[in-house]
Length: 171
Image 1 (cartoon, helix red, strand yellow):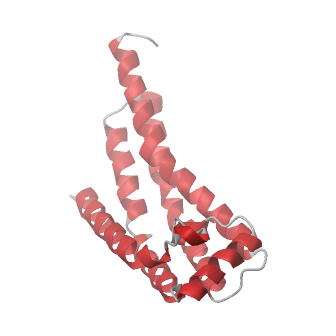
Image 2: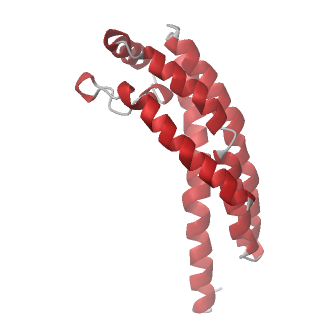
């Protein structure tokens, strides 16, 4: 039940975030991923370039709105992913169950990582694109996406492999 509630809220917020952030996508100006471009700028030159494009198109406020809305989203999606991994762990045994439980706890680290990332993005949207803001934002985003990836991909894949191994009695 709780998993369903957090999942539905997360999906609704994804749709809202997509709609709010759509004006930030300006592929002909090299900003094809919207706010994701600012989450992973890597260098101050790239962050400054993105901000300049958004300023010229008058869409910086959409970035601010999307980032502020993301503070609500970051309180929901890690819980949904954690509950998913916990549910999968309940269907596994041994190492797979332990791995699922570990990932279910680890994915909750997305909340502070995403929050710190959002604060850095807001600073950059305010014109502070100098180091270390873009680099720190990129580090936070990479760690966050790694945790999300482990929850969505790694654990279910390993769970599948365990079932396959049991089926063919490979230990």
